[in-house]
Amino acid sequence: MDIIIAGDGEVGFHLAKSLSKIKHNITVVDPNSELLKLLQTDNDLLTVTGSSTSINVLKEAGISDCDLLISVLHEENINLITCILGKRLGAKRTIARVSSIEYLNEDNKSMFKALGIDEMVSPERIAAKEITNLLTRNTATEVFDFSGGLLSIYMTRLDEDTVFVDKTIVEVAKQYPQMDARIVCIIRSGQTIIPGGDDYYRAGDLIYLLIRPDSLDIVKTLFKKKEFHIKKAMILGGGRIGRRAALNIQDKMQLKIIEQNKNRCFKLADDLNNTLIINGNGSDISLLMDEGLGEMDAFIATTDSTETNILSCLHAHRQGVKKTIALVENISYIDVSQDIGIDTIINKKLITASYIARFTLGGEVTSSKWLSGIDAEVFEVIVKEKSPATKDIIMNLSIPSGVSIGGIIRDGKSFIARGNTQIETGDKVVVFSLPESAAKAMKLFN
Image (cartoon, rainbow, N blue to C red):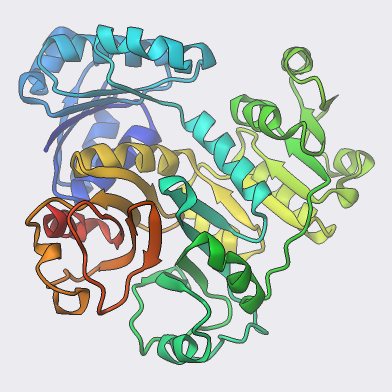
């Protein structure tokens, strides 16, 4: 696929790096020639220096042959103009990053579609939704639903007293047949492991499970994860993510927001009717303590400073807060943040990549999720007629290295994939894949 990415920072560059690994033809447009040189040095892609709102620059980037134009600059107006121009100049599909709630209104989508903007993505809105899901299902470190929750990716850490520790995956499967789930990935000491039956569970592992909703209680019991009710929560930072998260949860719990900008506090007070707004510096630990940090069930740090978010969550954890969530913009910090005790990391670059990746894998991919801290994704794909995946049971298929088939949704029902499972035309299959294997994985189902 020929893809043009317009971006003025880490979101665009992260997308370019990730998608180039999947063997797409990537061209990046950016005004900063020095940054483009650095990007091109380590990645197999092309670059064009200039503004994405310039017709000549878009033509130089190959817009007439473009399958997908992605504009993810910080200025949403530039993204909208880029996509409108790109569509008129020949781009087959366009995606714009936006932030305004007004633009994301369902009633306005048809208007933007007529202008040439096929899809709009808001990392801030998706991040807020992810925070809401994590507070609702608070035993998970990370969670993502497929087909409305018929199957879910559930990520958690193995404690030393977990019954699985130092046992192989086959041993656990035989000993606990009631756990109808499939382990698709293990993160151990920063390394990604696609496990086989002889691999061991180890204390401290971060594991990704694909589970059915009726198996969740069994999984939580076996992993010794106790559900708790979040009655009180504190959000540090009242920007777009903090505000949107507050709107989602303010009626479900007692909520406080601490925001340093006084004008923003007034705007928050207008929007949030059931939230206590506090004007103060969130990096001031004494202020957090005075506002009852130790009494909170959940603490969510969403300021523009990654360091502030990490340190404040660590302090909250030490004060006994049961659930801590930190917005971490630097991907290289994710592993460290998880290792030192922060429950969940939210990263806008990964969120944006998750949303956009499904448009690059083919029309039959209905949803996808890039996993935090590793270069890997889980996606849901509809199986086409006469595809290789339908020729035999799973154990006899030529499944590429770096690919694992997790589960299947058929006729509104879900089940975990086993070696003797037969995939059928029209099934929705949930697949785990490393980036370099994604294109090969798609050939199984097309």
